[in-house]
Length: 115
Image 1: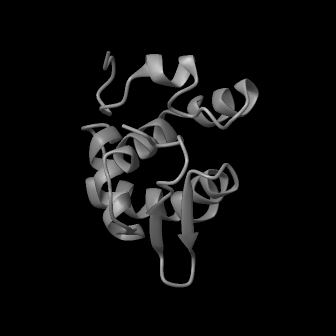
Image 2: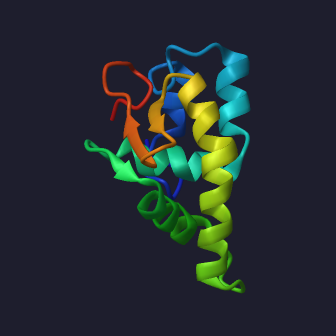
């Protein structure tokens, strides 16, 4: 059951198969932020690494209010991804993030992003 605009099933998050390797508190913490939910949704559909700027564009497009400057929102979101969201997702074992090359690689050998 997909019940959001990001393509992943909220049921999977709650029944333990989407973020199954995480405890309930950590799952709740990660999914409590709407930008991070959008980020996880974009990454869940990927099978290959993505550059930070491309990822920021995709996520910003999915969650940017229509009343804001889209380019400014994307730039601000890219900084937020780099300093806040991606390190949290890396700590949770959902992505591997190389801050030197700005390469984001979804972790495929866990149940974190299983389709």
